[in-house]
Amino acid sequence: MADQLSIGVLLFISQRAIEARVMSAARQAGLTDFTVAQARLMARISPNGSRISDLAERALIAKQTATALVDRLEAAGYVERVPDPSDGRARVVRLSARAEELRPLALAAEEEVYAEWAAHVGRRRMAELRQTLTLLREITDPFQDQ
Image 1 (cartoon, rainbow, N blue to C red):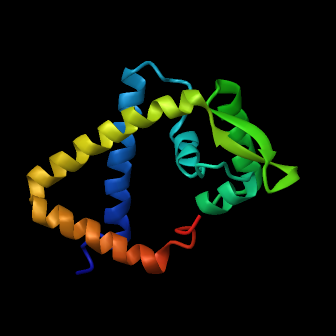
Image 2 (cartoon, rainbow, N blue to C red):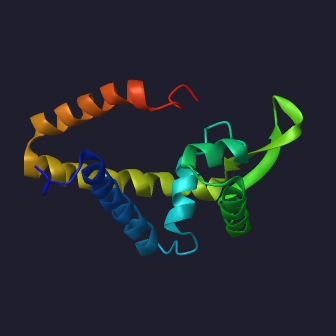
C-alpha cells in the first residue's frame, strides 16, 4: 500500500487535468491574458461578488496575493470592484461580462473531460464518484452555504 498514491494526490491529479483542459480551451479561443492562479480565484467568486478577504480564505492564499491576482484580473477586464450592497464602506469583486463569456467554454471543456472519464470507467462509476464527492462535501466544504 505504501507505493500507492494517496486519495488527495489522486484528486489533485484529476483536478489538474480539468484545469489544463479548461485553460487549453481558453487559449484556443484567444484568451491568453490570465493565469491558472487567476482562473482558480475567478472560480471562487460568488454570483453576487466576494470580498477579497473571503477569496483569500477560500483559495488558501494570503490576502496580499489575492489582491495582486484581483488587480491583474481587473486590469485585463475579467473582474470589477463594486460597492458591497450589505456594507457601503466595503467593496466586493464580481465577474465582469468578459469573464462570464468564459463560462460556456469552461463548462464545455469540463463536460468533454467527464465524457472521456465515463467512457474509460463507465457511467455507473462516474455517477458513484459524483455521489461520493457530494457526500464528502458535507463534511469538508466550509463554504458550501456561500
